[in-house]
Length: 243
Image (tube, rainbow, N blue to C red; front, top):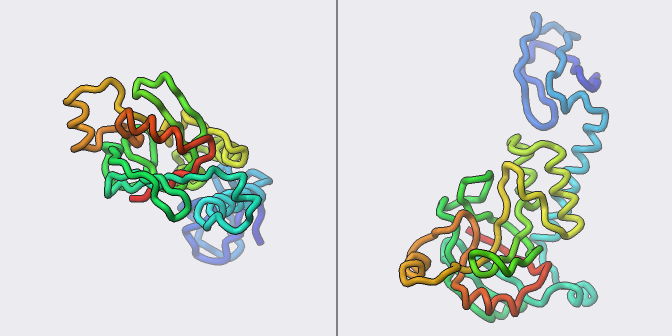
C-alpha cells in the first residue's frame, strides 16, 4: 500500500522511487511493513499523478505535431505556412522546401559548442529538433533575427528531468507551445536561439563564416541570404534541425 509522502517497504529494499527519480534510504533492518518518508517535495504534492499525466500528454502532443507528417487534411494544409526549413548541422546547410521540392540551399554556420543538442545556457550548442519561427527582429546587430521557439517541449522535458529547470518553468514552456508563442527565454536552458545574418560585413567575417561554426547557438546565413529567406517564412514556419 502506498500513500503520498510515505511508501510501504515490503522487505530489505534500499532504493525507493518517487516518479521522477530515485533516493537512497536507510531502513531499520528492512523488515516488512517498515516505512520511509520521502524527502522530495514532489512526493508531498497531492496533484503529483495529475502533473505526471500532464507532462506525458504535453510531450506526446509535441511529438504528434512535430514528428509525424502534416499532410492529409486540406483545411489544415491551408492554415499552415507553405514552406518549411530543413537544417543539417553536419552538412552546414539550410534548405527551403515546398513539400518535397527544394527551393533554395544555403551554407549555414552553427554554434561553436560542437555536436549534440542544446541542454543549458552558455553551452554554445545549436538545438536539434522541430521548432517554429515565433518572432522577427529587424534591428538586430546581426542584420535580421528570426526567433525560434526554443526551448520546445522536448527540451523542457529534458531540463525538468535533469533538474535544470523546475516544474513551473516546464509548465510555462508547455503553455507557450500550446499558445504558439515564444517560450520563456531566461531559464537555465538558455534562449534567444534563431536564424540571423552576420551583421556588419568585412572580408574577415565572410571568411570566418565560410570556414567555421562561430555562433553562440544560432543559425547564421549571410545578410543577403537572410533577406531572401524572409520572403519564404512567416510566424509558424516549421524549422527542422538535424545533426
